Image (cartoon, rainbow over all chains, first blue to last red; front, top):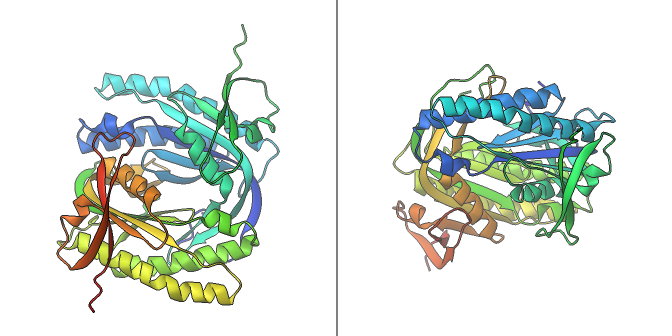
Length: 201
Length: 201
Protein backbone atom coordinates (compact mmCIF):
# COMPACT_ATOMS: atom_id res chain seq x y z
CA UNK A 1 0.00 0.00 0.00
CA UNK A 2 1.62 3.23 -1.14
CA UNK A 3 -0.29 5.20 1.51
CA UNK A 4 0.96 3.48 4.64
CA UNK A 5 4.62 2.61 4.89
CA UNK A 6 5.26 1.49 8.43
CA UNK A 7 8.58 0.02 7.29
CA UNK A 8 10.19 3.42 6.95
CA UNK A 9 10.45 6.66 5.24
CA UNK A 10 11.59 7.90 1.89
CA UNK A 11 12.96 11.40 1.96
CA UNK A 12 11.73 13.94 -0.51
CA UNK A 13 8.57 15.81 -1.24
CA UNK A 14 6.88 17.04 -4.39
CA UNK A 15 4.76 20.04 -5.19
CA UNK A 16 1.40 18.78 -6.37
CA UNK A 17 -1.72 20.59 -7.43
CA UNK A 18 -4.57 18.77 -5.77
CA UNK A 19 -8.21 19.27 -4.93
CA UNK A 20 -8.56 18.76 -1.20
CA UNK A 21 -11.76 17.47 0.41
CA UNK A 22 -12.64 17.83 4.06
CA UNK A 23 -15.95 16.56 5.41
CA UNK A 24 -17.37 16.64 8.89
CA UNK A 25 -20.66 15.49 10.39
CA UNK A 26 -22.44 18.50 11.85
CA UNK A 27 -22.77 18.17 15.62
CA UNK A 28 -21.71 14.53 15.67
CA UNK A 29 -20.39 14.62 19.22
CA UNK A 30 -23.57 16.24 20.53
CA UNK A 31 -25.74 13.74 18.63
CA UNK A 32 -23.70 10.95 20.22
CA UNK A 33 -24.10 12.06 23.79
CA UNK A 34 -27.13 9.96 24.64
CA UNK A 35 -26.05 6.86 22.76
CA UNK A 36 -24.10 3.87 24.03
CA UNK A 37 -20.46 3.83 22.88
CA UNK A 38 -21.08 0.79 20.66
CA UNK A 39 -23.98 2.61 18.96
CA UNK A 40 -21.77 5.63 18.32
CA UNK A 41 -19.06 3.48 16.75
CA UNK A 42 -21.64 1.56 14.68
CA UNK A 43 -23.16 4.81 13.42
CA UNK A 44 -19.78 6.38 12.72
CA UNK A 45 -18.40 3.33 10.94
CA UNK A 46 -21.51 2.96 8.81
CA UNK A 47 -21.02 6.55 7.71
CA UNK A 48 -17.25 6.26 7.18
CA UNK A 49 -17.69 2.97 5.32
CA UNK A 50 -20.23 4.44 2.91
CA UNK A 51 -18.12 7.57 2.34
CA UNK A 52 -14.89 5.58 1.88
CA UNK A 53 -16.48 3.44 -0.82
CA UNK A 54 -17.69 6.54 -2.66
CA UNK A 55 -14.35 8.39 -2.37
CA UNK A 56 -12.43 5.37 -3.62
CA UNK A 57 -14.85 4.90 -6.52
CA UNK A 58 -13.97 8.44 -7.64
CA UNK A 59 -10.22 7.72 -7.26
CA UNK A 60 -9.85 9.98 -4.26
CA UNK A 61 -6.96 9.37 -1.85
CA UNK A 62 -8.10 9.20 1.76
CA UNK A 63 -5.45 10.82 3.92
CA UNK A 64 -7.12 10.52 7.31
CA UNK A 65 -10.16 9.94 9.40
CA UNK A 66 -10.01 12.38 12.31
CA UNK A 67 -12.93 11.44 14.54
CA UNK A 68 -15.90 11.91 12.22
CA UNK A 69 -13.95 14.11 9.81
CA UNK A 70 -12.54 12.80 6.54
CA UNK A 71 -9.54 14.33 4.78
CA UNK A 72 -9.04 13.23 1.18
CA UNK A 73 -7.30 14.57 -1.91
CA UNK A 74 -7.84 14.22 -5.62
CA UNK A 75 -4.69 14.51 -7.73
CA UNK A 76 -2.04 12.69 -5.70
CA UNK A 77 -0.28 10.34 -5.83
CA UNK A 78 -1.69 10.32 -9.38
CA UNK A 79 -2.76 13.46 -11.16
CA UNK A 80 -5.66 13.34 -13.61
CA UNK A 81 -7.08 16.14 -15.74
CA UNK A 82 -10.48 15.91 -14.10
CA UNK A 83 -9.35 15.95 -10.46
CA UNK A 84 -11.52 18.92 -9.51
CA UNK A 85 -14.58 17.60 -11.37
CA UNK A 86 -14.16 14.16 -9.81
CA UNK A 87 -13.92 15.75 -6.37
CA UNK A 88 -17.16 17.64 -6.97
CA UNK A 89 -18.98 14.61 -8.34
CA UNK A 90 -17.70 12.61 -5.38
CA UNK A 91 -18.99 15.20 -2.92
CA UNK A 92 -22.38 15.22 -4.65
CA UNK A 93 -22.49 11.40 -4.46
CA UNK A 94 -21.57 11.54 -0.76
CA UNK A 95 -24.42 13.96 -0.04
CA UNK A 96 -26.71 11.84 -2.22
CA UNK A 97 -25.94 8.75 -0.16
CA UNK A 98 -26.94 10.33 3.14
CA UNK A 99 -30.71 9.86 2.73
CA UNK A 100 -30.56 6.06 2.49
CA UNK A 101 -28.07 5.88 5.33
CA UNK A 102 -30.23 8.10 7.52
CA UNK A 103 -33.31 5.98 6.79
CA UNK A 104 -31.37 2.99 8.14
CA UNK A 105 -30.23 5.02 11.16
CA UNK A 106 -33.76 6.14 11.98
CA UNK A 107 -35.11 2.59 11.61
CA UNK A 108 -32.59 1.53 14.26
CA UNK A 109 -33.30 4.40 16.63
CA UNK A 110 -30.14 6.26 15.67
CA UNK A 111 -30.13 9.94 14.72
CA UNK A 112 -30.02 11.25 11.16
CA UNK A 113 -26.64 12.71 10.23
CA UNK A 114 -25.87 15.74 8.08
CA UNK A 115 -22.41 16.27 6.67
CA UNK A 116 -20.70 19.39 5.35
CA UNK A 117 -18.09 19.03 2.63
CA UNK A 118 -15.42 21.58 1.69
CA UNK A 119 -13.36 21.46 -1.52
CA UNK A 120 -10.34 23.59 -2.30
CA UNK A 121 -7.71 23.38 -5.04
CA UNK A 122 -4.09 24.40 -4.61
CA UNK A 123 -0.47 23.41 -4.66
CA UNK A 124 0.67 21.41 -1.65
CA UNK A 125 3.77 19.48 -0.68
CA UNK A 126 3.10 15.76 -0.93
CA UNK A 127 5.51 13.27 0.56
CA UNK A 128 6.13 10.56 3.06
CA UNK A 129 5.57 12.45 6.26
CA UNK A 130 6.32 11.19 9.72
CA UNK A 131 9.06 9.41 11.55
CA UNK A 132 11.13 6.34 10.82
CA UNK A 133 8.75 4.44 13.06
CA UNK A 134 5.60 5.73 11.48
CA UNK A 135 5.19 7.53 8.20
CA UNK A 136 2.48 7.99 5.63
CA UNK A 137 1.93 9.63 2.30
CA UNK A 138 0.60 12.99 3.44
CA UNK A 139 0.26 16.65 2.57
CA UNK A 140 1.24 20.02 3.98
CA UNK A 141 0.69 23.58 2.84
CA UNK A 142 -1.62 26.55 3.09
CA UNK A 143 -4.32 24.99 0.87
CA UNK A 144 -4.75 22.23 3.49
CA UNK A 145 -5.33 24.81 6.24
CA UNK A 146 -7.65 26.83 4.01
CA UNK A 147 -9.78 23.75 3.31
CA UNK A 148 -10.14 23.12 7.01
CA UNK A 149 -11.31 26.71 7.55
CA UNK A 150 -13.81 26.45 4.67
CA UNK A 151 -15.11 23.27 6.28
CA UNK A 152 -15.76 25.23 9.49
CA UNK A 153 -18.20 27.35 7.50
CA UNK A 154 -20.12 24.46 5.88
CA UNK A 155 -23.63 23.83 7.02
CA UNK A 156 -25.19 20.38 7.04
CA UNK A 157 -26.01 18.90 3.60
CA UNK A 158 -23.89 21.60 2.01
CA UNK A 159 -20.86 21.47 -0.30
CA UNK A 160 -18.71 24.60 -0.40
CA UNK A 161 -15.99 24.97 -3.03
CA UNK A 162 -13.35 27.67 -3.27
CA UNK A 163 -12.91 29.86 -6.33
CA UNK A 164 -9.73 27.93 -7.14
CA UNK A 165 -11.76 24.72 -7.47
CA UNK A 166 -14.53 26.44 -9.41
CA UNK A 167 -12.05 27.68 -12.00
CA UNK A 168 -11.00 24.11 -12.82
CA UNK A 169 -14.46 22.67 -13.34
CA UNK A 170 -15.63 21.58 -16.77
CA UNK A 171 -18.90 19.94 -15.75
CA UNK A 172 -22.23 21.67 -15.43
CA UNK A 173 -23.30 22.29 -11.85
CA UNK A 174 -25.51 24.73 -10.00
CA UNK A 175 -23.22 27.25 -8.30
CA UNK A 176 -24.72 29.80 -5.92
CA UNK A 177 -24.43 31.68 -2.67
CA UNK A 178 -21.01 33.31 -3.14
CA UNK A 179 -19.38 34.13 0.23
CA UNK A 180 -16.11 35.74 1.21
CA UNK A 181 -14.45 34.13 4.22
CA UNK A 182 -11.69 35.82 6.16
CA UNK A 183 -9.26 33.22 7.38
CA UNK A 184 -6.69 33.57 10.15
CA UNK A 185 -3.17 33.47 8.76
CA UNK A 186 -4.27 34.20 5.19
CA UNK A 187 -4.12 37.82 4.05
CA UNK A 188 -6.66 37.69 1.26
CA UNK A 189 -10.20 36.58 1.94
CA UNK A 190 -11.19 33.26 0.39
CA UNK A 191 -14.19 33.23 -1.94
CA UNK A 192 -16.39 30.16 -1.69
CA UNK A 193 -19.53 29.01 -3.47
CA UNK A 194 -22.20 26.47 -2.76
CA UNK A 195 -22.39 23.78 -5.41
CA UNK A 196 -25.27 21.43 -6.20
CA UNK A 197 -26.45 19.11 -8.96
CA UNK A 198 -27.84 21.06 -11.89
CA UNK A 199 -31.59 20.62 -11.62
CA UNK A 200 -32.65 19.80 -15.18
CA UNK A 201 -36.33 20.68 -15.21
CA UNK B 1 0.01 -3.65 15.50
CA UNK B 2 -3.09 -2.97 17.58
CA UNK B 3 -3.31 0.58 16.20
CA UNK B 4 -3.61 -0.14 12.50
CA UNK B 5 -5.86 -2.94 11.40
CA UNK B 6 -6.16 -2.73 7.64
CA UNK B 7 -7.57 -6.24 7.61
CA UNK B 8 -10.88 -5.08 8.95
CA UNK B 9 -12.90 -3.81 11.76
CA UNK B 10 -14.05 -5.01 15.11
CA UNK B 11 -17.32 -3.56 16.20
CA UNK B 12 -17.66 -2.02 19.60
CA UNK B 13 -16.34 0.95 21.44
CA UNK B 14 -15.40 1.62 25.04
CA UNK B 15 -15.58 4.67 27.26
CA UNK B 16 -12.07 5.51 28.33
CA UNK B 17 -10.71 8.31 30.46
CA UNK B 18 -7.64 9.58 28.66
CA UNK B 19 -5.34 12.55 28.65
CA UNK B 20 -5.31 13.88 25.12
CA UNK B 21 -2.31 15.70 23.63
CA UNK B 22 -2.43 17.92 20.57
CA UNK B 23 0.67 19.71 19.34
CA UNK B 24 1.18 22.02 16.41
CA UNK B 25 4.17 23.95 15.09
CA UNK B 26 3.37 27.66 15.20
CA UNK B 27 3.26 29.10 11.68
CA UNK B 28 4.77 26.02 10.07
CA UNK B 29 3.18 26.62 6.70
CA UNK B 30 4.36 30.23 6.58
CA UNK B 31 7.88 29.22 7.68
CA UNK B 32 7.88 26.68 4.84
CA UNK B 33 6.94 29.06 2.08
CA UNK B 34 10.44 29.94 0.96
CA UNK B 35 11.90 26.46 1.30
CA UNK B 36 12.16 23.72 -1.30
CA UNK B 37 9.60 20.91 -0.82
CA UNK B 38 12.34 18.44 0.11
CA UNK B 39 13.62 20.83 2.79
CA UNK B 40 10.12 21.17 4.22
CA UNK B 41 9.69 17.41 4.41
CA UNK B 42 13.17 17.00 5.92
CA UNK B 43 12.44 19.63 8.57
CA UNK B 44 8.98 18.24 9.31
CA UNK B 45 10.16 14.65 9.54
CA UNK B 46 13.07 15.57 11.80
CA UNK B 47 10.55 17.20 14.13
CA UNK B 48 7.98 14.39 13.93
CA UNK B 49 10.71 11.78 14.41
CA UNK B 50 12.04 13.44 17.56
CA UNK B 51 8.52 13.94 18.97
CA UNK B 52 7.43 10.38 18.14
CA UNK B 53 10.41 8.94 20.00
CA UNK B 54 9.60 11.04 23.05
CA UNK B 55 5.87 10.27 23.00
CA UNK B 56 6.54 6.53 22.69
CA UNK B 57 9.10 6.65 25.50
CA UNK B 58 6.33 8.01 27.76
CA UNK B 59 3.92 5.27 26.59
CA UNK B 60 1.74 7.69 24.68
CA UNK B 61 -0.42 6.38 21.83
CA UNK B 62 0.02 8.39 18.64
CA UNK B 63 -3.34 8.61 16.91
CA UNK B 64 -2.40 10.79 13.95
CA UNK B 65 -0.05 13.16 12.27
CA UNK B 66 -2.17 15.81 10.54
CA UNK B 67 0.31 17.93 8.60
CA UNK B 68 2.59 19.23 11.33
CA UNK B 69 0.08 18.50 14.09
CA UNK B 70 0.35 15.46 16.34
CA UNK B 71 -2.63 13.88 18.09
CA UNK B 72 -1.77 11.43 20.87
CA UNK B 73 -3.47 10.01 23.95
CA UNK B 74 -2.28 8.69 27.26
CA UNK B 75 -4.53 6.06 28.82
CA UNK B 76 -5.66 3.94 25.87
CA UNK B 77 -5.47 1.20 24.82
CA UNK B 78 -3.87 0.69 28.26
CA UNK B 79 -4.81 2.80 31.25
CA UNK B 80 -2.18 3.61 33.87
CA UNK B 81 -2.58 5.55 37.11
CA UNK B 82 -0.11 8.22 36.03
CA UNK B 83 -1.53 8.93 32.56
CA UNK B 84 -1.94 12.66 33.17
CA UNK B 85 1.49 13.03 34.79
CA UNK B 86 3.13 11.07 31.98
CA UNK B 87 1.43 13.30 29.44
CA UNK B 88 2.75 16.41 31.21
CA UNK B 89 6.28 15.03 31.55
CA UNK B 90 6.15 14.02 27.89
CA UNK B 91 5.09 17.53 26.83
CA UNK B 92 7.90 19.03 28.93
CA UNK B 93 10.38 16.65 27.31
CA UNK B 94 9.06 17.58 23.84
CA UNK B 95 9.53 21.29 24.54
CA UNK B 96 12.94 20.51 26.05
CA UNK B 97 14.03 18.75 22.86
CA UNK B 98 13.30 21.73 20.62
CA UNK B 99 16.49 23.69 21.37
CA UNK B 100 18.84 20.97 20.10
CA UNK B 101 16.66 20.35 17.06
CA UNK B 102 16.52 24.05 16.25
CA UNK B 103 20.32 24.34 16.56
CA UNK B 104 20.57 21.65 13.90
CA UNK B 105 17.96 23.42 11.76
CA UNK B 106 19.78 26.75 11.97
CA UNK B 107 23.13 25.09 11.13
CA UNK B 108 21.49 23.81 7.93
CA UNK B 109 19.84 27.10 7.00
CA UNK B 110 16.41 25.93 8.14
CA UNK B 111 14.20 28.00 10.42
CA UNK B 112 13.82 27.42 14.15
CA UNK B 113 10.49 25.87 15.05
CA UNK B 114 8.28 26.55 18.06
CA UNK B 115 5.54 24.14 19.03
CA UNK B 116 2.47 24.60 21.19
CA UNK B 117 1.13 21.63 23.14
CA UNK B 118 -2.38 21.26 24.59
CA UNK B 119 -3.38 18.63 27.16
CA UNK B 120 -6.89 17.80 28.25
CA UNK B 121 -8.33 14.92 30.26
CA UNK B 122 -11.78 13.44 29.73
CA UNK B 123 -13.88 10.45 28.85
CA UNK B 124 -13.90 9.55 25.15
CA UNK B 125 -15.15 6.67 23.08
CA UNK B 126 -12.22 4.53 21.97
CA UNK B 127 -12.67 1.91 19.29
CA UNK B 128 -11.79 0.68 15.86
CA UNK B 129 -13.04 3.53 13.77
CA UNK B 130 -13.31 3.56 10.02
CA UNK B 131 -14.53 1.34 7.26
CA UNK B 132 -14.02 -2.31 6.42
CA UNK B 133 -11.34 -1.17 4.00
CA UNK B 134 -9.54 1.07 6.43
CA UNK B 135 -9.90 1.27 10.18
CA UNK B 136 -7.76 2.30 13.09
CA UNK B 137 -7.90 2.46 16.83
CA UNK B 138 -9.23 5.97 17.30
CA UNK B 139 -11.18 8.28 19.55
CA UNK B 140 -14.29 10.44 19.43
CA UNK B 141 -15.97 12.71 21.94
CA UNK B 142 -16.17 16.27 23.19
CA UNK B 143 -12.80 16.09 25.00
CA UNK B 144 -11.11 15.56 21.62
CA UNK B 145 -12.72 18.70 20.20
CA UNK B 146 -11.94 20.68 23.34
CA UNK B 147 -8.27 19.71 23.12
CA UNK B 148 -8.14 20.97 19.56
CA UNK B 149 -9.63 24.31 20.63
CA UNK B 150 -7.16 24.62 23.52
CA UNK B 151 -4.38 23.96 21.02
CA UNK B 152 -5.63 26.92 18.95
CA UNK B 153 -4.83 29.13 21.95
CA UNK B 154 -1.31 27.81 22.59
CA UNK B 155 1.59 30.09 21.84
CA UNK B 156 4.96 28.79 20.72
CA UNK B 157 7.02 27.00 23.39
CA UNK B 158 3.94 26.82 25.57
CA UNK B 159 2.09 23.90 27.17
CA UNK B 160 -1.52 24.56 28.14
CA UNK B 161 -3.42 22.04 30.27
CA UNK B 162 -7.09 22.05 31.15
CA UNK B 163 -8.37 22.04 34.72
CA UNK B 164 -9.41 18.42 34.24
CA UNK B 165 -5.79 17.46 33.59
CA UNK B 166 -4.50 19.62 36.44
CA UNK B 167 -6.79 17.84 38.90
CA UNK B 168 -5.17 14.50 38.10
CA UNK B 169 -1.56 15.56 38.53
CA UNK B 170 0.54 14.25 41.41
CA UNK B 171 3.90 15.65 40.33
CA UNK B 172 5.24 19.05 41.22
CA UNK B 173 5.12 21.53 38.35
CA UNK B 174 4.94 25.28 37.96
CA UNK B 175 1.36 26.13 37.03
CA UNK B 176 0.51 29.71 36.09
CA UNK B 177 -1.40 32.04 33.80
CA UNK B 178 -4.96 30.75 34.35
CA UNK B 179 -7.20 31.56 31.38
CA UNK B 180 -10.85 30.91 30.62
CA UNK B 181 -11.53 29.95 27.02
CA UNK B 182 -14.98 30.05 25.50
CA UNK B 183 -15.33 27.24 23.00
CA UNK B 184 -17.91 26.91 20.26
CA UNK B 185 -20.30 24.05 20.94
CA UNK B 186 -19.40 23.88 24.64
CA UNK B 187 -21.65 25.72 27.08
CA UNK B 188 -19.22 26.19 29.93
CA UNK B 189 -15.94 27.97 29.39
CA UNK B 190 -12.83 25.80 29.67
CA UNK B 191 -10.22 26.81 32.22
CA UNK B 192 -6.62 26.26 31.14
CA UNK B 193 -3.25 26.83 32.77
CA UNK B 194 0.26 27.14 31.53
CA UNK B 195 2.53 24.42 32.93
CA UNK B 196 6.32 24.42 33.18
CA UNK B 197 9.11 22.57 34.96
CA UNK B 198 9.34 23.60 38.58
CA UNK B 199 12.39 25.82 38.70
CA UNK B 200 14.26 24.60 41.77
CA UNK B 201 16.45 27.57 42.66
